[in-house]
Length: 336
Image 1 (tube, rainbow, N blue to C red):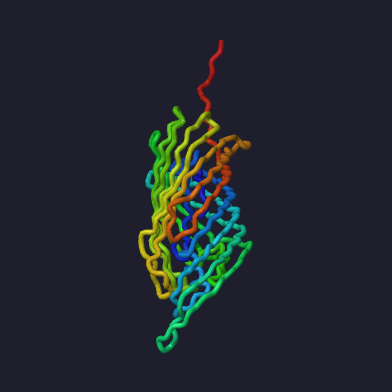
Image 2 (image 1 turned 180 degrees about the vertical axis):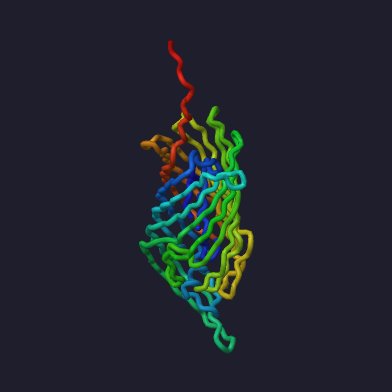
């Protein structure tokens, strides 16, 4: 079953990886080779304080290089996305595992606002200083396509134990302008890779999944800013009450490991962190000769640093080939 996916701290507190990208059953191989499709509705509502607001002001060109100031401002964002992922699972094993290739596209809206004050001093050409004070109120919104996200994965099954490895990337073709507050693309290339494990016992209905990955960000050509290396851990734990109904918890931890850099970096190391946890419910049902899976999960975020935090919800529908029917006996029947 394709895991619950989509693809966000880096420059301005925004990263390629969206925490919650993987969920329960992430490492379980698909039941049969062939095409599957996953559609996702994703909503997030987040806010951030002066650290992220200052970073956004710098990127927008509203924070002069010769300004030393305290920023007392807030950034608020509401994002609604529709995501569609097509996956082809190969029949021929690769390294003894099941190989799959996915391409994910997104379309939606982003509404972001920034409001607050800057108070400090401006340094003149001769080294003299002047007092500076300004109140900013910026509203930005758009409806557009996001970046394309290809992914290649390998999955292995050994009884109740399932393993996976994956590599994915951001193709920066989505709506992005460094001088615009709201965007749906990140404006630079990124590559992400990692591995995961799922324990799933169909007899007891117990399930636990965890996927650990790392993101390498390339330089943003518009801002000459390079975000540091990110680490992310997505997990899910659930109990199948019946063969169809699943309930449980999901969570994630996102931690930037490397400092930001580049000639456009005026905020320093700016390592980001956020954690989230929340409930989930899933339902498996037949759709003709296919199998459908509907999953709803939500996260409340906490422990954020240099990154917006709030809440988000994912509604995922996956349609894939059902398990093949065991062949009937071909032995002849003898009658008297």
